[in-house]
Length: 368
Image 1 (cartoon, rainbow, N blue to C red):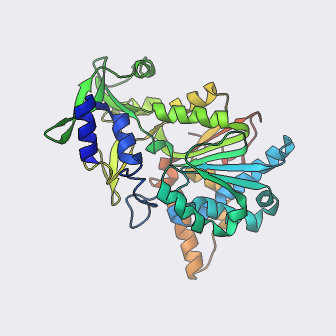
Image 2: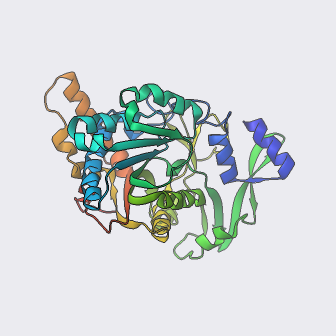
Image 3: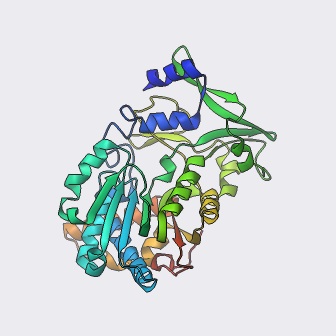
């Protein structure tokens, strides 16, 4: 992958961080996600909600049952579940298992579309979801159109390409990727896209020297998701902060980092493209603005801890000392632990053509 990127730079000149990230993660043959069906878990590079076990999917099924009630009142006769960034289908399997057990009316009316760019992951979905084959209507690389139900994305936006920029004493520059003797290096240049300047029109409160990311692809994806939904919801789980925090001294060096074997590296993000994960924290303010501009109603943003507790996670965890009960409690702890997934993972919910229904997962009122 390094040689491919160097060759492209020699042919066309320095590339944006967004183009570098697109190649490193999603190149159809050499990209990080394209070359393996699964990258997370104890033996992978990072840990996700799904790696805690089926409990996360069970709680999403509870929220979907609540959404199904709202949709039926609005006249819906089916529930489309579209999972974007579905990977090998483990989350879809877990929530479908739970829906079949606890919410048969929801399950009987479900039709599921899995959206995943990685061909190996799409192939793995067949075995993962074998028992629910009749509910899977499509597995594809892009969002469908005309969704009545839910578009769900768990840790998708933080893996979408971002532009890296700096503001030094009010002067905006973009970090591009160049090469010297085959080694990838950072180069400062004029912004490639005038929209970058528009996104940083207000710099009040920023430190004199600031570096950060602008997620134009995440905003584009939000608009596409909003266009896809005719009637229903958008539910997002991701690492992120409000814009004022991302542009403060706390994050003055940016959030772009690599993950390899569960170790984060913010200094060497150009090293070994295609062999490690690349991620940047989501600008929650920008996502909310993009959603509103696209016609979505903001229902709230909440720490994952309070979202899952609002759905009854505490009541679902088994008591006792048998292995299954202990595993259930450990999974719950992983999902809601402060300082871990519970507080660093944010949940954002939006609706379209439904007004502002009160969702059970947002019932705690602990909005961030």
